[in-house]
Length: 164
Image (cartoon, rainbow, N blue to C red):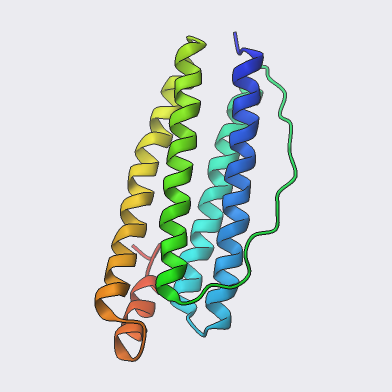
């Protein structure tokens, strides 16, 4: 049975995933304003991916006979100091989400909800990938610098995400 406590925790995580989506869309808008269409493309794909995560949780709650409750989403930041600051925020945010997923998994364990634990294994693996990708981009920006040809090359590299 899907416990009330776990249902509430899943609803909160749906909200976090939708807020993540909104954050990445705001970050993409910032990248566009800085004439970095490759950065914007990467962030727009991230926006869509986070919506997919929310919908995966949404579907699970409904399949378990629970009730989805949607909560308000706060306005995300509009401006970032630089491309490196932007990806520092991405990495920090992904680390925050990892912590929330881990907490949700702990709740599923305490509630002895094995189906939720199986689903959350996927999210745990996904967060490893999310943090690694953000960290790699951030380190590349730091090594290359934030001006000139290196930034243009980085922008072009990010534009290729999803074209494989």
